[in-house]
Length: 565
Image (cartoon, helix red, strand yellow):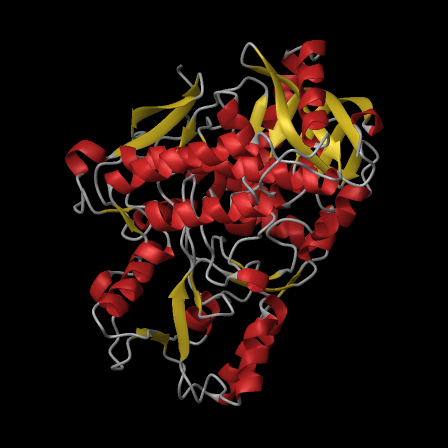
């Protein structure tokens, strides 16, 4: 494709929402209820089936059940993260969980109820739902809004930032070969977390079979990092404990069927290591290393009713697991389910990785707000927490728009992005393909930055090697070639992942302790150090280098935090 075939288009809006997933859709709904604000949503897929809810879910994992309070949820999330959380973010999210759940039901989500008309709880914080259509429900509601325009198949590749103030963004139309310059008074980033940094459980053709959506490349993180936004807690990686090979969820087995983690000797080992999310993974890794694997969730002997419930639940959210049971001829009541950890991910909905935001979800770039998996400091969000943060960010963005004027995007900034695109789609002089560099990146991270190959463990020498090799791959990515805009998107996705890899490595190297086994298993510092490391590990990119910033924890019960520098 020749550069003269690149069409350009300039758009103007009040509020730009980047990412049409859970948080992005709910942000648009919130703004539309409160203000007559012109909204543009850019989604690189299609909002009807994009993001983490694309295939649906069978439970809402964050809800304040009867007899519990928002503070109880704060305490639970804080304990699971061993204290490295933001009280203000957790509380302001938790106090909205039930209201956004009721809103979802009003929009058409089926939430299971008992004979008394009360929601059917699953454990202390979860509700059972029929959620296979949860994303279409949200998308339908958004598409009906007269003040909202949705651009599907438009991939945002960079922010437009001047003097630490965001003025919009740049994007590419994947199907219409168009370069977009979008000017906006405020921006909400809601692009989700990052998958594909590490070599996955399943290689080759099946490499997409992973816990987190393979299309979530951490674009929102990367754009913020490049423009000097302060980021937090990238060292708290997330590793999911899943059913082996199918990478299907295990929570339904543990909570729905009461299945315990056992080793090959039939011994329950989960209580030996602890019950936090990271400890459940660590226990499984350690039992295998010490020769007591494989590890399982004990389902042998469950009742016919429990088994039927499991078949239905997995058909809704991970049909490959139900199919495997049927094809093998060994149902869960006849055979325990083998488990394993996934590759590490960076995701602010389960751990605390992401943008450093204030209580209003404002980032350190003026006019830029973050919500959902891309916002840091507030783990255990899940679906309803992402909705709550979308609501908070939306309300804050409306306030910001009312008090601030828009600024045009500089022509030189536009021209530099067009030149970059023309370079990628120009003459092919690259010695490598995008896929080859992506595989090389995943191999580096797997071998030297605590991937599956090293049982999630690393030392500082390995991290030095990882950093050196990721820098090399970043340089090589400058000369990649794309035949069309679809391949151009793949180049930008790779470059986003490489940027995040550098931040992950810097954060892993900065925390000189092991607070979360497996999530950040530092062999040079194998013990927890509360005296020196009850801190947030934050960072900013300055002149191409990542500078680590250590911040003190917010006070117990703190409800408001504002950026001080």
